[in-house]
Length: 398
Image (cartoon, rainbow, N blue to C red; front, side):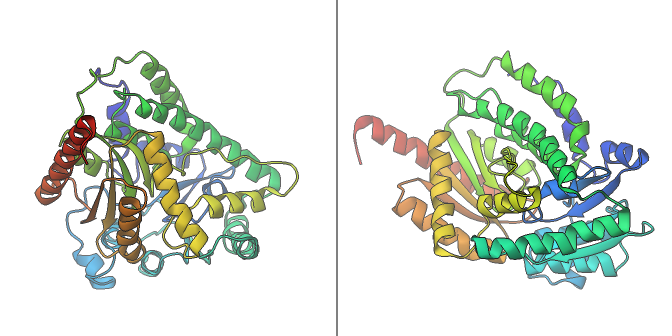
């Protein structure tokens, strides 16, 4: 396929945490708010005068300092991000809003705060408790936590407008991005997708790491460009896959998978588009904060939610998107030492394979997995297994 005009630009944005759009926004007087989890609703971090930056550690090759302050058996993503912070990679942040969702992510945020990794005058960190169940009782607690430990500190420290009107404006701004990402992602449903999983991951990931409003023009041009992009011939890709699991903040892992001949047509992971880039619909019947919190609580698919209904919903959701995007198989990936996905991954594997009938590959991977020959070999074998299954189905064999 013809190269997309803005792909290299977006790739370059993801090379550094403090990219040119972040610098542009801060020069205009806006404040950068770091966050580490889906459980802190993004619109609350993108109110007028502030913008959110999802913390990640591109190109980290060593976690020696991260190991020292955390532990060698801590989540590799947390150790890599702390390593980057200690190197000065997040010195531009004005605040961090962290959830008590994952003990490892919380220890990461605490170390960034107490080790003085963010020297901006007035820098602060705030910690919010978030629910482990999804119901109206826990929603009240969730709303209170966002009021006291997210909105209140933003107003007191930075003078940010946290009114209902400001939240509604932030939701609409995010919805603009979500509509564009959804429009771009819809092409993955085609028999021969006119956008690869790697390309889509680049565009989607940038919306988590940059001021969203500064991306709109180039995303609109990309969406328009895709309307006339000629896809590769049918049969170019050996298999279609849905990628599911813990965070993928390095698109090189998607590229490694696609280099084996498959194409990633759907995503259900942190930093992904499903459900992270779906529209938030607000009504006038209830305050905006409660509606936003309800949306994030109900749409969240993290294995941290332990009630039976949510566990079943998580499996059914993956089955739904795999069928909707016509995936031949599902890859469930987990970053090494991730506690929640450590028990969520094998359970999901068993359910999707035995109860829903999907072909599933389950992998435990390093944080920086883009050059892993072992992973490449496993994914190649999975592609061959999916090809054999398709041949058997065509012949009516079982």
